[in-house]
Amino acid sequence: MANAIVLLKVDHRKVTGTAEKLLDIHGVTDVYSISGRYDLMVIIKCDAVDQIEFVITDHLLKTEGIIDSETMFAFRSYDKREGGKAIDVD
Image 1: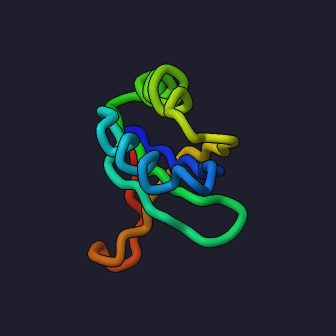
Image 2 (image 1 turned 60 degrees about the vertical axis):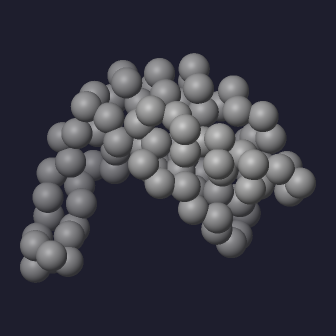
């Protein structure tokens, strides 16, 4: 499974509405309101990286209110439930 974290700067008047719209996008599993340079953090999980690219470019970034974004791909997960052992996310 491919995983991406997308950080979004959002028009401050539209943060809640934008977050709610993002949750309706297939592949988006979580949306967090965060502090710092960005307003929202979006978690995307799909079967393949090309599906994530489709979710981001064809859906997520077309959502009204988004001003800027930064995308990161997760290579490995370190899960506390697994005793801190690395888990491949492919």
